[in-house]
Image 1 (cartoon, rainbow, N blue to C red):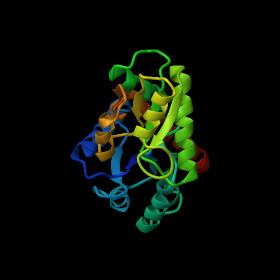
Image 2 (tube, rainbow, N blue to C red):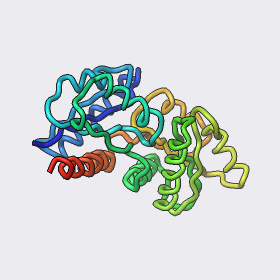
Image 3 (tube, rainbow, N blue to C red):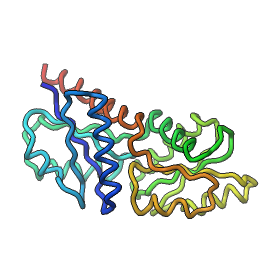
Amino acid sequence: MNATLLAVAHGTRDPEGVRTVLALLNEVRRLRPGLRVEPAWLGLVEPSVPRALASLTGPVIAVPLLLASGYHVRADIPALLAEAEVEPGTVRVTPALGPSPLLAHALASRLGEAGRPPDASPVVLAATGSSDPRARADTAESARLLSTHLNAPVSVAFASGQGPTPAEAISAWHTAGHPDVSLAAHLLAPGHFARTLPRTAARWTSAPLGTHPSVAELVLRRYDACDLTMMAINA
């Protein structure tokens, strides 16, 4: 019996953000016919993680639809699992989606769709931000992977918390003599922060990752790696 893939998303008040996450899960189902894929949300949207788990039987693999590790992965999800009072060993939680070369590929693809030419001009990777050092380290690693993929310099900016804002990071590249700067949205789905990005002075601004095939493939890779671990434990 295959474990159910429970995709745990952040939650948003933006209806387009919700639709994008659900469309991503449809892409995952398309890639893996027969696999049960169900959504759950950390807040603002139903079903919550406990409510989703209450409707499921058998083993469950929870895949956080988050681009970096941080408080949500380390604290929120374990707390929600405890609230759900699931049987020990029936639910396993994978690492966050990022950092990953597959995300770097998707980010580069979205930049190309936005019009960025395949050159060495600088890129600012715009993330939501976190006070968690591990989440910030993951974002820095995502920037490094994107830099390697593009063969171009990539700096990091954050919507909140410590570190430069996207506008400040773009301005720093302009001051250093680079007039053409791209802004890569290190975001899964549309929302308030994504809508602010096109207002910066970047020449090209990418859309959120959304339903990019590499993201759907990465969700399945996280699931498969955890599924093999569960099979080994239960053997």
